[in-house]
Image (cartoon, rainbow, N blue to C red; front, side):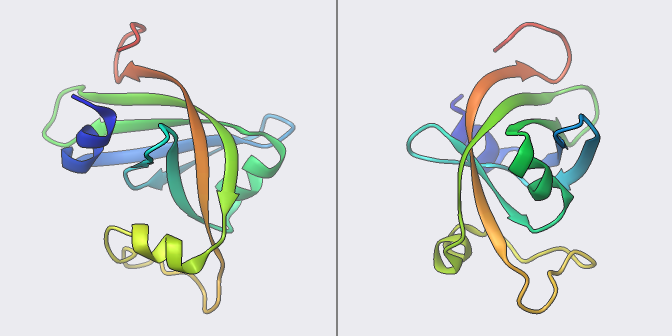
Length: 129
């Protein structure tokens, strides 16, 4: 199954890990990545710590745990390649409304952050898929 199809159909929870230039790690719940036509993956981000960390350290990891119990899912190892701020483009990619408690402040900027996919692995184990 292609990664794009996987993330369009899989149900579960995603966690994005980033670190700043000094190696201080942050983890945050994130929705499914957008798998772009050129093979990159992108996340819509607010101007919070994950986005701030990516300004000084382009590396991130995304862990996706499928719903339904067990240890199914994927690990994505990522390198930031660019970001966009076009509100119309970001709005066109949004899949759903922002969850309660996670609403951006009035006028808070959003970013579409693109990553090169360095490696994909299963949720458990060391074998790349």
